[in-house]
Amino acid sequence: MSSVLPRNVSFPRAAARDFRVLISAIGFLLGGVCLPAEGEAPTLDAAVALFNHHQLAKAQKAFEALVATNPGNSDVPFYLGQIALQRGEREKAVAYLEKAVALSPKDSRMHMVLGDAYGVTAQNAGFFSQLGWAKKCEAEYERAIELDPKNIDARWDLMEYCCQAPSIAGGGKDKAMEQAQAIGRLDATRGHFAAATVYSADNNSESAFTEFAEVVKAEPGNYGANYQMGRLAAQTGQRLEEGLAALRRCLSLDPPENVPGHAAAHWRIGNILELQGDKVGARAAYEASLKADPKFSKAIDSLKNLK
Image 1 (cartoon, rainbow, N blue to C red):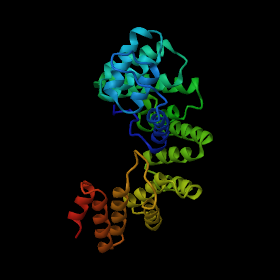
Image 2 (image 1 turned 120 degrees about the vertical axis):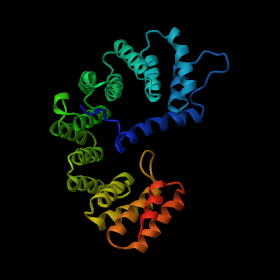
Image 3 (image 1 turned 90 degrees about the vertical axis):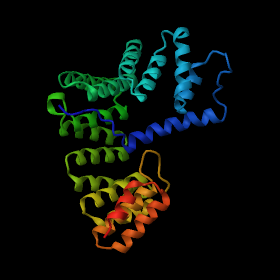
């Protein structure tokens, strides 16, 4: 059985997560959350702020200090589980998150992240135990959705799971598209991204391109959709002019986190120009990519291979 965890973080889910972190970080920076002084017991809000501000070592220490004083608070093992997950400590992550779910069995987000932990475990499990972990992953995502049908992140995870998992593990493109359509009913933009993800997994690049184009039509300044149009054009050799125009729009926009930036956009422009036989333009694009990021290895390689 192949690996099944849907953990190639996609733009819409990443964007939602970044927004939550931004809100927390603003409070953190403006003093809305008071961090404990040396020797002072941490508060839950302060520990969460440390986690959201990517200070994992300090966050872990704070949450561990809260274990004794807040034994019934499910947020404590929930965050400790996420820290362990980010550090690749799979067994600890599963243990903490199972405890969080046991304390708050009706909390959708906790089931969702426990599904993540089961998925990571499935990816790294032996052949004979992988299927069992994969099914547990799927079950947690489904439970998260059952508890909160508006949990788009859980639907996204289940969608990507179904895209990647074999049918014996509950996967399937039809099931994935059901989740993409449900996401679309909750958020039209993310629904287009979701459908494009399913089409891409099914090697239907034309339909994926159309989904991204719909986002750009409604939101010309959507960097992620513009970049994806250009990426698909460069990879498939189809709709090159549209892809080129989309990538050039990217250069006038600020790239969000977790999405390839301007160096990648210049590189993709070079890819398309090379496909069109414009070697001079391709060279200029690769050089622009390296100006944006001198260590961008893909542009370095493309420039070396340009003949």
